[in-house]
Amino acid sequence: MPLIECRSLTRTYRRGNELITPLNELDLDIEAGGFVALMGPSGSGKTTLLNLLAGIDRPTSGTLTIADESITTRSRGALAAWRSTHVGYIFQLYNLIPVLTAYENVELPLLLQPLSRRQRHERVSSALDQVGIADRHAHYPRQLSGGQEQRVAIARAIVTEPTILLADEPTGDLDRESATSVMELLSRLNRELGRTIVMVTHDPRTTEWAKTVLHLEKGQLVEHASEGAA
Image 1 (cartoon, rainbow, N blue to C red):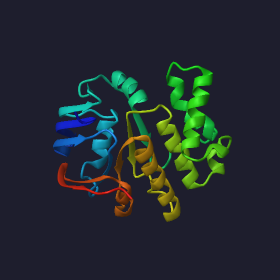
Image 2 (cartoon, one colour):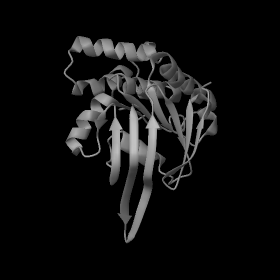
Image 3 (cartoon, rainbow, N blue to C red):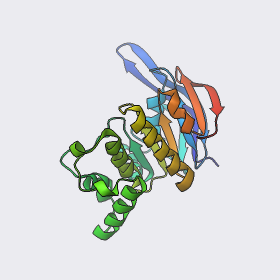
Image 4 (cartoon, one colour):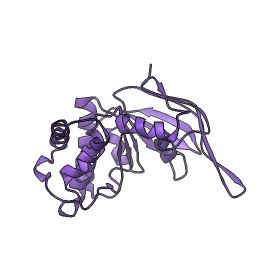
């Protein structure tokens, strides 16, 4: 059974008198260990799908199953609890808290879990080491480059050992060299550690690292192209 299974997944909302359907009866399977890049024009449903997978939003109709758990009809409180252990989210603009060190930013999601201080330290140290930024653990975001900030953000996303990693334009605010470094890191997390990654991107160059490229248009899957990862 696929790790992620979407069936007739639909999201609609009203804007004045107009009914907007950013996602329209989408059927999609993603296997464990996959690295999927979602592409398409603005308004095609990419971010909507990412938010549904994260449990940030709920579908209007259809079903969504992740790791054999249906998350379609859960309450917002139940979704928040589910998300804290199953989802790691990587943002384009990092979303680090400026008054916290790199270590403290990565530790933050663990404060919601029943872990001892020692267990949190082991998790944070491991995550920082995995992204190659352990030597910057005491630095504040303002003391880091954009690429280093994104590495801290990735460490924060993986520290809870989530079921899936979701990345929304993870290289959109980076120069080419930093972007390449971040994509190589995501590829290694997928290839060597088996992390399942779903990434929204507008940059076709970032898809070189994905195993599968999906194209969305008007809320529907219009092309499905599997590609070898770089």
